Length: 514
Ligand code: FAD
Ligand code: NAD
Ligand code: NAD
Image (cartoon, rainbow, N blue to C red):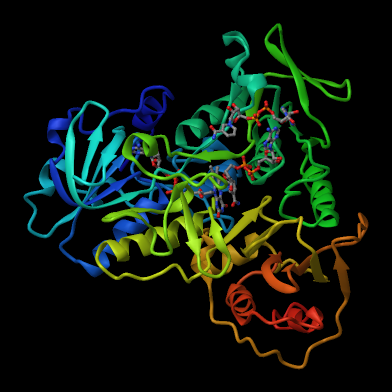
């Protein structure tokens, strides 16, 4: 069990604790080496283990933690007061049941120095250790201190790191103390202390992280620190504007504002100054916002710095290690998760930064490391919750610059992330693909159909299906407050048909039945 005191100590951002403390305790030869102990790495381990029961797997992770999931860090962890928690690194799912951030407890893993000897194999994690370079020809990974690990199969699952903006990264040290990015447990532990006392936080960015965190911190403020003001500043007109059609993005922004977030949309930070104990953000429209803390959530860049030294190719457009449909970068060397730019046979070259993709691509890489030789065929999904009441799930190419057609229906209390977690007791919604029939029972009349051109701030977009079209084919689907219908969405994408009337297709999702 990871105790809170240890985790607080190791949370000191600049010093991840190294376990083991010396590389001499890390094996010099392993059958399976996983570089990166995030979701993709852990998923690869599970796949390897299921096909090769006595496999010996070594995970090397730069983070000072055992593999854990990131999604709750911008959602559930903030929704119950800290004082009520037994352990900071557990959280209450939307239905109130407790869960750990960690995939498995400490005693699930064996120590790296025992890996070689153990006849039943197992998985060991060397924490706080970073791979500097790979020699794909000799099949050797080099640690930061020069220690060499010879592997038979290796996976790169190095994930991504947050970007910043020049205006902040080039600011003087005194200003930078007020600026942070947000990616992992140490960021959460630090911010969790800050929200208890501080008066004001500004989140820069209107994407997934900025929007989820703004809602979450605002809700947390109402529970524990009512004086805390949460601002969200972004240049787009509405939240998640790159994914949601304009009218829905604007509608969502209203909802985020109702959560208590002070939204400043359509704005850019042009200058930053230190004024007493606050930083003042000068916006392009002449406004000034003064806050104690700034969280920069302007996207991530894949961790590919070892590519050049290792002779590996990085995709010039998407970033990420370039891999084929079998997720191979070179012979015996694979890449999965946020860090990989893979060939999707259906939609072409892509890099996807979501949890379920990390699970699915990690699993596929793991299977292929054992010799399955399978291509990427199964589309991953993703979900986002803006608190317990609004959420969506998506699959395929969901890019708001594509034409969209949407069908909405009135929602009830059952149509919320909270209700679906109460029913399933699982916060990881990719786990919930239930078998839902794709044949519709006598459909009710369609209520609303919107295209991306329309903009109606007053409509109540309680729940609905949004289709994203390319060359008239459905290439992506958002299930807006509609849950457990991903199987249907997957089937619609697979069918690859041109539909005359997407209202009819929407009926397959049974949104009018309840
Ligand atoms: P990561 O999780 O980034 O793991 C990579 C690991 O590799 C890290 O531990 C890193 O330290 C390590 N590493 C990097 N380089 C090296 C090296 N050279 N040597 C050793 N180790 C190295 N997605 C969703 O679909 N739904 C959500 O609701 C959702 N919520 C999110 C909330 C937050 C706060 C964040 C940050 C992300 C969220 N995501 C969500 C995205 C999702 O978490 C990521 O897509 C996923 O974590 C990617 O997994 P990964 O294993 O590829 O990379
Ligand atoms: P930048 O600061 O030059 O900003 C670029 C654009 O964003 C400009 O249009 C600017 O007006 C706008 N902008 C700046 N601050 C804003 C704000 N607070 N709100 C809204 N809009 C704002 O940054 P960049 O060149 O886009 O890069 C961002 C950071 O990411 C930099 O630190 C850069 O080094 C890094 N980056 C690295 C890579 C890479 O190494 N592959 C790729 C991209 C970005
Ligand atoms: P994002 O890509 O979703 O959003 C980036 C935001 O930053 C956008 O609003 C964008 O306009 C803005 N931006 C980009 N460049 C900028 C610039 N130069 N200046 C000003 N603004 C700029 O990324 P994120 O919200 O930072 O999330 C971080 C990572 O975590 C992503 O990989 C994301 O997919 C993942 N994440 C996913 C979920 C989810 O799937 N539910 C939740 C949280 C985080």
